[in-house]
Length: 234
Image (cartoon, rainbow, N blue to C red; front, side, top):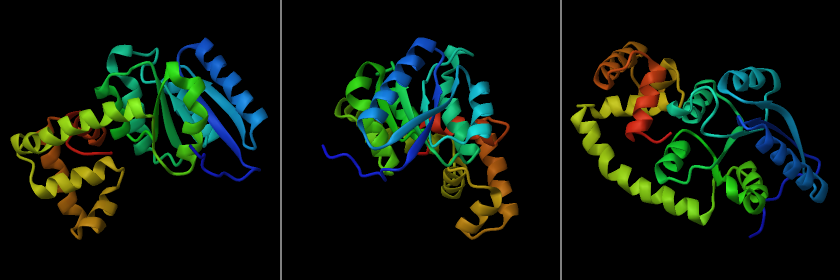
């Protein structure tokens, strides 16, 4: 497969977010190898073991790419990598996120891509796929290896068949679904109002109704619940 073309002088800054130090060191070794053999230089500008450290480094360093694990040391039971993706959308992060995960279950892949990841690579396939994955997402494309894509689209078919019934069971109106879509995209109330040609007051009224129907209290909770239910695609 032909790799996307990137300017030869470009330096790509990368933030590593994974709670295993040995794995992060392995990533550094791979990236050094890619920098030496290719015409693109990869610079690791920081490492984070948890979401709190990630947010601090994100504000300080503004990386081009984030390599994100889906289970971090703060609370593995809470799927906090998915929450991190949603949080990055809310912060209007302008870079790209590549998920590097041991999870091969189709539901994890689907939720990560819904959450805004630009690619998903199994950790045991890094040596063969990481370089191509990086260049692909830097070329504004999505990277899913065939075995990952198969799992993703299998789950996509499941969610596609259930999202409409779920929306109906929650009694979301067509307009509320439109508002919810733009909310997940990170749009402000003003931006949503402009996109839907309604007033900000109307948007706020729809959001209040959405929060009630989803049984949540704020925008972040609504985004998380909507994505987890498959009501919208991020």
